[in-house]
Length: 224
Ligand code: CDP
Image (cartoon, rainbow, N blue to C red; front, top):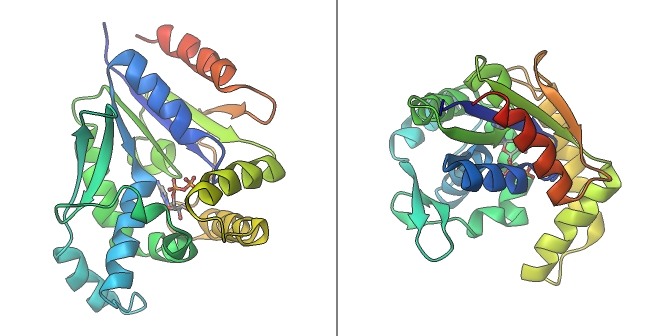
């Protein structure tokens, strides 16, 4: 069977990672959460008080960052490690989400992350989700999906996820964060979020996880 690259881009909290994980599992592909890389870099900058408005400081800081995805045998999912520390859960915190889009708009940060993402896709058999995967990271990917969903639904989903870990969180905070990130991500100069011309749009406002999976696996099977 032919191995391909599947890219899943789209707005915050519209179900990209759920779909990407299901596809990777079914196909025996590697799943890569590119957003986790930007979150891990942001965590490092916050912890080490890196002034990310200073490009020299950013360049120096990036030299000290090593990012790896390692499989967790128990959950059968890959988890992200920042300099050998498992940060899979701490990067989901709102403190990181508040700053990640500013950090992800920086040229040096994007070059650093994109080079690693392209390396991970060298032997194909990869499902990667993010904002610029079909446009910049793998412009020649065989299958490109662009996901959307109604903003109110997306806020509700993300609020549920975060509330389970932190009951002090409010729906207003979550809404403001998603709106801010979507705005910055789609208006930045380098690799803004946009649908690649050859991407297939998938609006999952009224689709179940099973339906969105079936829609995509059918498209995949036509290509492998
Ligand atoms: O889970 P959610 O969709 O909310 O976000 P994420 O995939 O974890 O990505 C976090 C942030 O990283 C996004 O809001 C973008 O600012 C940035 N990002 C990016 O610039 N390019 C990517 N390929 C992936 C994420």
